[in-house]
Image (cartoon, rainbow, N blue to C red; front, top):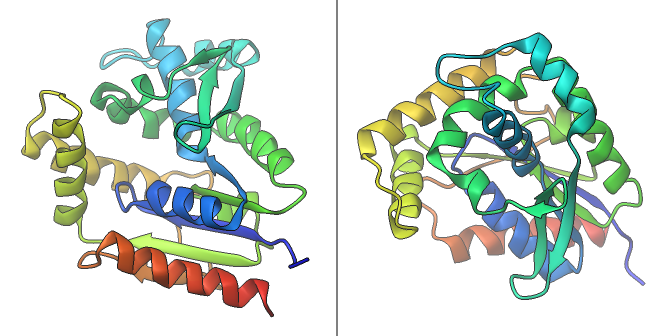
Length: 230
């Protein structure tokens, strides 16, 4: 039996981290965890309560709500991976809305939110055989991960991908708004005090600005197999 490893995939928003992580987990038979979805689910909960809006962001109220938030992943055999559930409700589609994207980085910057979710993430990955993607997996959640990848691409290319994804889903969005959101999230993710987005020293950087999905997957799969066979 081949050894099991922990694979951490970090990087900027809209670099296709989740896509390649899902592919890799499916190919290896590993558990896939989208940590960004967890932060989005917390954000969605707070938005529904009107605690987080464009004009309201009350940290003390947010902290009081954390004990009432339960995040879990439930495997969906039709899509081949675990979808995020918020207090028992499948919110996989709703958390991808642009409105959530505009608020999530602010919520993710709260230390207590990160502490709560990191504990869940570490528990999920304690037995290895996991592919986890996010912003701080290789630096905070699993600093000893066997394989660390850092995904990047040009701002414009990432905005274009996100815009097309939202349009294909039927959302009414403007490219300029998506581009501005990508830039804002980059700034918030890289400048927050707690666990800012940085490339781990031992991470392999992959710039996929001009990569096709198949090319990217083959590159990542080879890196994973090489590490497993070491």
